[in-house]
Length: 170
Length: 208
Image (cartoon, rainbow over the protein chains, first blue to last red):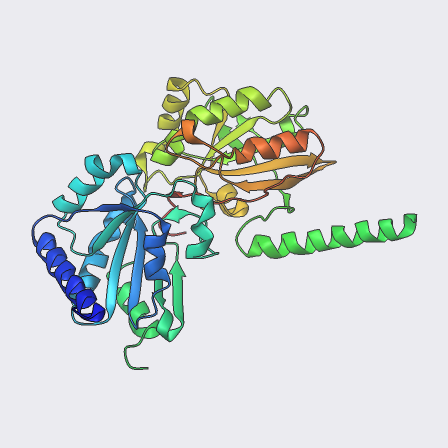
């Protein structure tokens, strides 16, 4: 009998290796439901999640995506994770989202949130969110830090929010 | 019996006035606020004010545009809403607040073209200064404000989405705007006075 913990750990390692590998070539974008997003929202780990809501049809969103990619790159080795949540319709996943993600070689975590009844979950992300995109939530539950912005963000602003509101060694 | 009611009414009027003044500064209207009228140019060149439409019981004021895929997905549903409710006293008043520099597809000429291509049965107004959108607190397209006439005032009765499925009209479960209007028309309270939905952010002028 292999202890359960070791099994879990090796499964995790394998999946990490696999994702790392897939990311080097083409990124497979999953269509997910709310609980998948809530794993990030409710995570207890000391990681600052930068969760950006975007869509391939949203011009200001696409314009700011390189900023998030740059932040992710700069944050290598740090407990900061960019998560790009596509608001595209599920039926456009293969036709629009996957080609977009691969054409732009996005390296951050990307998935499509397939929850058409948006009124049911927008407030869970942040009560101040009207639903306009782009919108970005910074969350680190272990530090009880949370910051939401319903506007396009520059790389300088991203860095400033991270350093001022989510300092690594407070 | 009469006096307390009167006092209560007076109190609620003051509360309302208080909140509306406060909320306007705070970024737009909330349900229950008194909305102000405007004068905007329609695609036919005429200036339109809400008070011009004397027979209306209220309005389905909708911030929308030519370019946002979500707004486009709702064009046909807006036409249906107007067809169904204009005769009952609630016409659709479509307003395009997007800045033409940020979004060239939302120019007045493009609005005229879209209105004629889609044969909009409702007015399609150009909020060139973006002041109406700012005053109302609109943030995205489409963004609906149902206004109800109450004496000389216009009361905000509903703010939010048209229904619960932008992508697929066939799969709509909850028709928020229709539910609000049906209740208003039968003199009942609106069950859900505000909802949220994903939409395109309004393209604000750069210096604003």
